[in-house]
Length: 107
Image: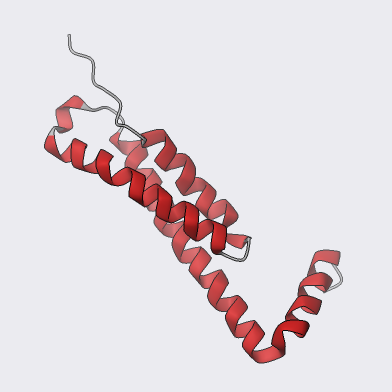
């Protein structure tokens, strides 16, 4: 009986993908970085799986990690676009004041 190997960085891809979604609200920067890192490290795993799919067992983690990384990148980009639009319309001082009010719960 032959045991299937685990793909390299499959779990790391999944964790980074999930973290990219969770951290997308940190002005978007951290979410984009984590999402891109997840996509980059998963590239080798995807290539290895495509060459020999019967040899590996956890391709589902790689797929899920890539999907969550893409979602995290998109959400982070939307947060960045929102921040840019808000700064353009109300200025940096107004944006900071609005964020302080939001954090204090008096919005």
